[in-house]
Image 1 (tube, rainbow, N blue to C red):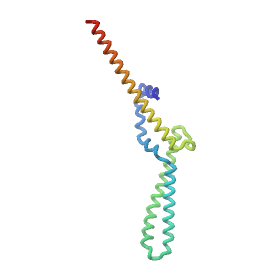
Image 2 (image 1 turned 60 degrees about the vertical axis):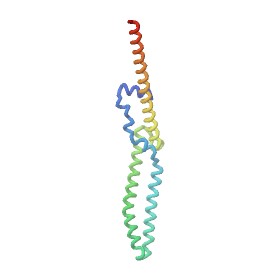
Image 3 (image 1 turned 135 degrees about the vertical axis):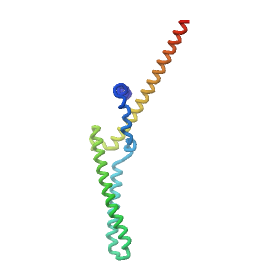
Image 4 (image 1 turned 90 degrees about the vertical axis):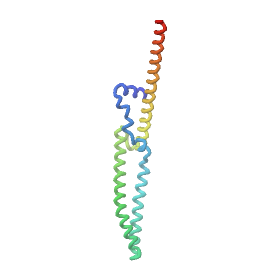
Length: 160
């Protein structure tokens, strides 16, 4: 990794800022698609239970008119929201698969969580290696300057 950073510093220093392209990677690495799927299913099942409650209240007569009206309004808005969540989850799944494919992985064998964790580890190691290279270069530069100063002082003493 240190060698890679050194070569990039010489050939194309703008690539050393690759971490800027992954600003959301740490947050993405915390996402678990299985948990999202379970939560989405819970929402859909909960909405079905509310619909069943509405159907059951139809037999209660005028006593529950306000209740039915409120439930109908809730269901109307909730169905649109549930459909939106389902659509977004489908898009997330497609994007997760595309991400794995982009990095040469099979999405069925390398899940999203593994891809993001691997990328996050790479970016962290890359940044650390670059920082260590910079510190090493700084130390070497100071050493050269100190040697130059020492040589200069020796030359001055010999001239006297």
